[in-house]
Image 1 (cartoon, rainbow, N blue to C red):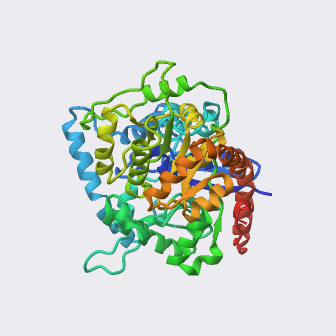
Image 2 (cartoon, rainbow, N blue to C red):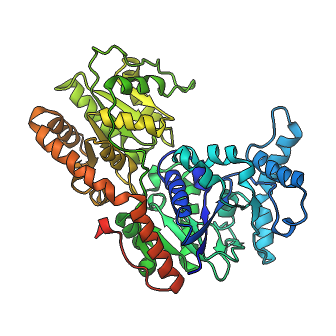
Image 3 (tube, helix red, strand yellow):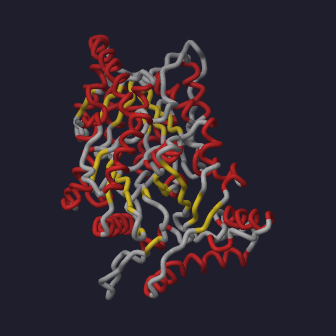
Length: 506
């Protein structure tokens, strides 16, 4: 059987550690491992800037070595913009980015496709690895992902979204067509502001409908909401298929577009092999906290680090998530404060995550506790260190009011940790009987569940949950999910009904 050619959207891999960026990296790397079934290439694009350089397909032959290198180097440089003091370069970048959307509209009016360039990543391994892959993959996978062929989509993702959002007086916007001739599939990690050419099929990896169903919880609200909805609507209309990361996400998709029921499947996220049980010490966890304290000079908190004295007890709750409203940090803070003021005065709180949007009220709540050395906000924690934090936490708390998946609970289970989560559909689906649950809108319920499981009378139940959690993580092993992807692509290639769900959702 001829391997299927798959183009994988890697733009989200630029955006952070967990969630969509992590799934982008893991899916790309693991699809590459199935070389007998798939020929996999990456699609590189910037979120806001136009990219330059790379090799045009029409000029691949006849280029001298130095020309090939210079075209790749120019592409890498375009990710960074002008250098320090380069006034004219800065002005050029501003003008170029401002004109991106009008130029795209003009090309669209002429019926032109967006052609893909080629980036020879093997010549620029450090750039590819450090910018796209290193935050989630193990170093042993570096050669695999940096040797893969990479294609370039020069216009920014934002400019492509802009031309598909209706403007006053223009009621029939549309998205550009990408020249995907020769590819069987393009996998996009979010609703994609473009169409594929005949002979290719667009597959949208659908993570959640939060920008539409819960717009009050997102940043850059108007653009994020509109870009998500109009790209999604166009994907539906153009015949895309949807690989949803959970059944809860699939049901949200069907609330918006019930007509895609027979084009929407559930294939859960892969979980990195970095999360497992290992022998480490509580002092190691305290050292990780000490080193990874988030220290933004704009924040006014006086940072107090934990004592590294071995004789100082250090029980802590752990939450791993970007700081944004729907993650429900405020409820966790209130529940933890309730415990500190009553039965657990020595319990610390460790929050791991970068700042997203709507985070200032959360940081304001952090501040007095940070100054007392009771709460620790960490960022840029690599997987090996996060594994230590999961292992020694009294419990990992997952309090979100909405999620598409939720890596942190699964990762904690892999490290032998106790997981206590909000009672929302996706947590019940993903965590199964490996977690205890609380009402995400009730401080009293959250604090009561935490107190019960951390006290002596809850020790047996906590052990039962840990045991169940060790079995849950096996459902997200890459090999198991790769089998589901293979089945999915085979069905899609034949035009068959792909309507199946993953084993854990059955």
